[in-house]
Length: 268
Image 1 (cartoon, rainbow, N blue to C red):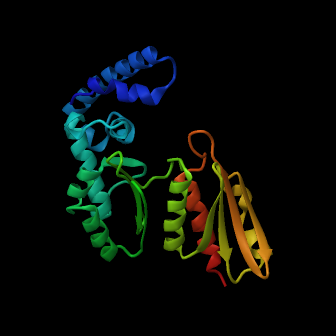
Image 2 (tube, rainbow, N blue to C red):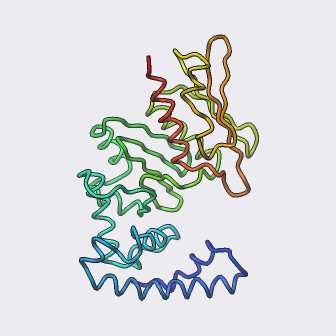
Image 3 (cartoon, one colour):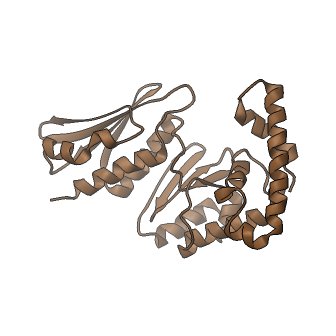
C-alpha cells in the first residue's frame, strides 16, 4: 500500500481552496486513511465483513482517482474483487452500486480475456442484454446489472446509480440501452449544447391514462416532464438542462423513468 504519492490526484478532485491548501489537505487525508487502512487490514475478519470505511468507500474513491492496483490496500482490494465476483457470477452478497473496478481486474475476476469475450459470454447467460458504445465509453446492461466502461480511464463502474450524466453522449447511450432493455420507442434530441430532450412513445393508452400513471411530479432529476398527443400518438417528454460540468440527472433517476413507463406501458 502506497497512497501518499497519490495526493495530487486527490487534490485535483477537491478544488476546495487554493492549490497549495488542497495539496496539504489531500496529503493529510490520505495519511490519516492510510493509518486507518493498516489497522483495518490487520483484523482480517473485520475487514472482510465490516471494513472501517463503510462499503469500502475510501477504496472506491482511490480507484476513482486512478490509484494503481499495486498501491491499493492489498487485502481490502482482494475482498472487493471477491465480493464483486460473488455478486455478479453467484448472485450472492449485498447489493453493489457505484462500485469502481479497474477494467483489467474486472475481466480477470470474471474469468474473461477481453471486452469481446465479456459481452459474448454474458449475452448468452443473462436473460436480458443491451449495450451501446460511443468512442471511449461502453455501457452494458443485463439482468439487474449495469456496467459503465470508461476506456480512457481504464475503469468500469458496476451498477452506477448516483453518477451524474456528464454530457449528451453519455445521456444518449443510457437512453439507448434502457430503451432496448425495456422495449420502448424513444427519440433523444440535443436541442442545444446543454439542453437535452428524451421523448418516449406510448402505444395503447390515452393521454389521461398516461398522465395518471406517470405521476410526473414524483420523478426526480429532470428539469421538466410532460406529455403530448398528436394524431392519437401519446408521448412523454423529459427535459434535462446541463450545467458547466454535467447535468444534475443521475443514472438511477433516468432508469426510474424507464422502469415506470415500461410497467404501465404493458397494462391492458
